Image (tube, rainbow, N blue to C red; front, side, top):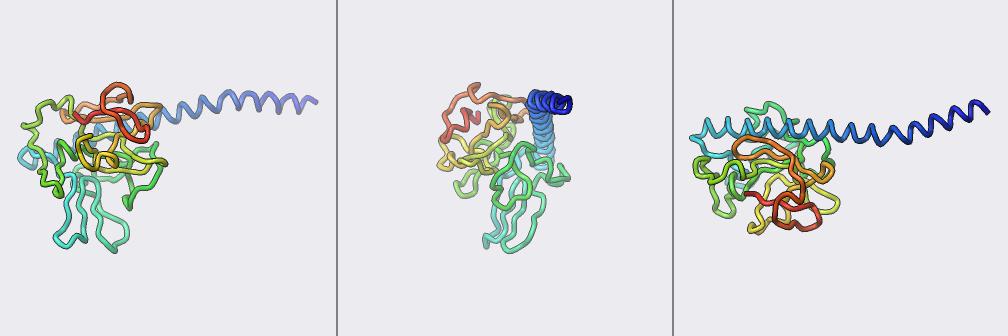
Length: 213
């Protein structure tokens, strides 16, 4: 009888403590995520400093379309694995492009979870949009550079943030995965969490609300 009482007490304590442990783990993951984005913001500015104050390109392809070179990853058709992208010489590791709370389809990228503001900063060669000169960004403190991202249900990775006016907006959205918040770093270098209701612009699929600038 005493053993049954002990087992019952242990079960009750476990049921009480497990949610606490889960919340602590989630909070720790969100903190790591925000730190990653702060470092990506620093890499973004270091790249610009070495490139006449022009933002890192979001992506571009080789002339035969066998190689995609992106801010976070280099993908070669038919090759296993991958290389660090355009920011790799500053980050030195792909782990900085991995949100510890993200799991989902990664489209061949080994680490993912974040996306880069393609519409306003990185440019899009298919749309004829060049990377932005940082001096031409009208509101750096109000323009997202990188953020938690994802789209669809179940949520899959997207590596390029798109504005609502962009034809690929539905596949380039912020993902508010941290209890209704998303971690972000902005063009002026500051990083912070934003809630899905704190900024404007409706997203499809219930991911939240945001505006790129």
